[in-house]
Amino acid sequence: MEKVINKVSLKQQTSDFQYWQQQTPQKRLEALEQIRQEYHQYKYNAQPRFQRIYTIIKLDNLKKNKLASGRLQDLADLEKLQDE
Image 1 (cartoon, helix red, strand yellow):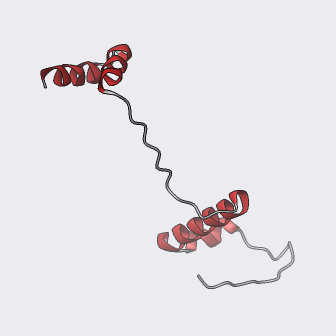
Image 2 (cartoon, helix red, strand yellow):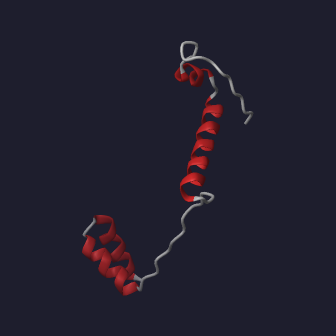
C-alpha cells in the first residue's frame, strides 16, 4: 500500500467518509487489515496468529458431558457413541 500524506487546514479537510466511499472494496479491506495488524502489534507486541488449543478428554467424560448438556444434538451423539 502506497503511503500518501497531505497537509491541509481544518477548514479545507474533506470528509473521511467521502474518501472511503471512493475507494474500491479491495482497498478498504486492505486498509482495515493494515489497521488490525498495527493494533495487534501495538497492543501485544506480536504477530497475530490463530489460537490452537485442544483439550483431550476420556470417552467416559465425553459421554457424561453430552448427557449433562441435555441438548438434542448431544443426546443424538451420545446414542451414536453407545452404538459403537
